[in-house]
Image (cartoon, rainbow, N blue to C red; front, side):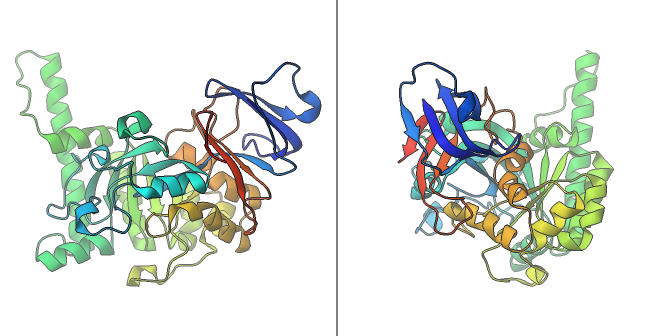
Length: 386
């Protein structure tokens, strides 16, 4: 198939004012200006009519499929708030691909999401990266597990204070995480010794430590829910102690320590932005946050945190970042290339590069124009919206 006569945003190179994207068997085969359009027959041609051709949008942090739309407790599967340490939980076992919000994601041009447990627990469980089309979650997966979700600050404190159980302070939250990571390292060390020396006994299987050992060894990224600057500092401190590969999620007060985050080289997934300051640790919330982080040199993604902001409004969240000072192409990168790279699936999605999945959005105007309409959405080369 060929999509032609559009403003092409490859996201791995300059914008092409009038160009094309070709794809076959679910993969992009060519991208370029109309003058370089290869000769040959195409099975189907879509004329973008001067609109914009972009990679499918990627939401790097949400809870899509884990909190059922317009339903109550029976569809609330994002927080196992009965145990503060649940690394063995897998989002795949709770995601409902029949949730109508998957369709709304597609209608909004969101073709890929990193979705997982919420932030009630200091250690919440394993997230997954999915395409937003399909009936069987196992067939929608790009990467699972994609990361381990940790949470600092107000959420664990509030949940466990109500239960009169630990942790009810930031100290206890960090201590629990530190203790479990230390135990995971010890567990992995015993496994390694048993494999090297037949005289050593293999440790008894522990589902929690088995899941955490990949994080402690740096093989599985840690995504830290952190709003306040001091909680962000705790995430950095813990990650330094254990040599973690890590990402800051939300980073509401990241703008207060933007230079320090840039120095650490840690990516930040900002958002949600279309919400009120619903709790004390959001007091420092500002729509300038993504711009200030980006200007400092931090790799930034923008998320909806669905259902906090409905997932179809991901481009609007990025548009708001532009309104408050973010470079336009950087904001597009924050919901395409950067988001895909931070989610660990940049080799498959996030740019219009030959060989990558044909996840493509066609709009009739720039996607940050609130009047723009999506004309077509393709996932793996199949049209899912027209």
